[in-house]
Image (tube, rainbow, N blue to C red):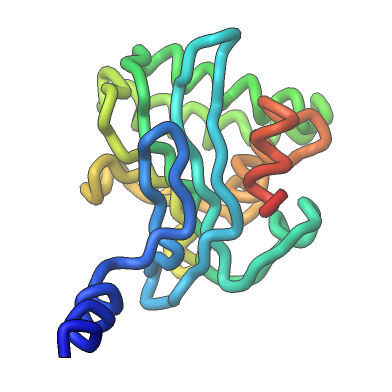
Length: 186
């Protein structure tokens, strides 16, 4: 009898697929009425400072960056802040990551939407330790930025923009090589 109760209790606990720097990332998430799976999770560091724990959620697991970037349907990048970062610094790092992974012409075409992203980040003022920032691809709307499940700003149009965001972490010049490997399930 006690064994049955223990098994039932264990089954009732939420499933976590990964723990990164003390942050538990769920093995599944839901975006735009679609079930997504945690593709991979890792730690973003600057020198020796832990910045955020990141997870990429896709409709199905992908181990090749190009496949993850081009996957159809809703997607999510979840960033769990491990330290405070000024919003302009955070937004600037995202913009730099996009510029590093695109030609000058491609980056120029993304500029108006990068400005929209910067305005959303400015609205946030600061990415504070403990915040959960999500960047969701909503096929019917665009890229939605949320903080602690609260949407900020209007969705940013274009799947090309969301793919540009994914290249920050999964592109040819990722923000951090070992983070790219971890987000691809390595």
